[in-house]
Length: 309
Image 1 (cartoon, one colour):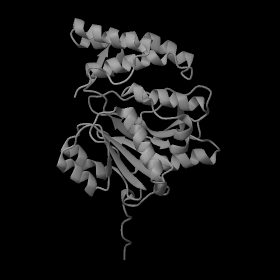
Image 2 (cartoon, one colour):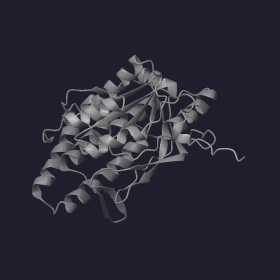
Image 3 (cartoon, helix red, strand yellow):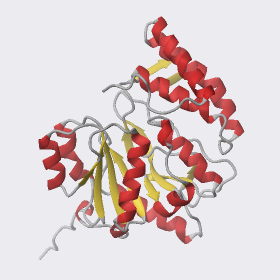
Image 4 (cartoon, helix red, strand yellow):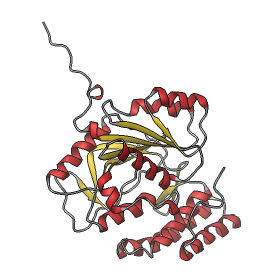
């Protein structure tokens, strides 16, 4: 008699998941997005947390509860950085040693945390203490995939590639390293948060590693602006302004490499110009971007003043 077909990989908890908590960030999710979240996570995790940076309707709250999520936050928008910090604290309290992060838009496979856990174990076995391990980025339809530049002077571990930084969504963060490196900058609020933290972790000797064997499509903004060989996400004005402000401020931080600062010094004006052109050359947009750059130089951080309510 023929043997039964093997059980699907997504139905079996992968080794190491019992020490991993999942942390999801939510901001004005649709009911369809909330309903899909449970299917993006495997069984066997130590805990599931969701942080709400906006008010959720009763149906969404009930769906999250049915899916085993502990809901954090009262709906006040404290920014992505603070949401991530509170998810990390909750995961640590639950006994996890790593936190798998995901946002409401990421179409992640439930096998992803197990694959990243295995990659993390390979790095630990080599005597390394990685800050974060993440999947190779892919572009969702109509969107630009993020680029993660390699970390100069650091060798790959097999196919695991050291990179300067990784997006938080879809990544596995080591909580012991998180405690040593310090939290995400809440005053950055929303943009360049993971970039600054990963550079800071590298300065402590804790690397960011990309696993090319697994991928995750990314959706940033509402499409892509393309001109003169440059592609960048099309985002709301407050997002672009916050990114510009935080990037300018980051030039003063000693843990960002000089080569990165010089490259950003050339690239940021081009991005600002393309964004202004895409807006139809509106004077109000130029004033907002110029004000954001000034705020970055003066260290005026925190929630953007034009944050949608």
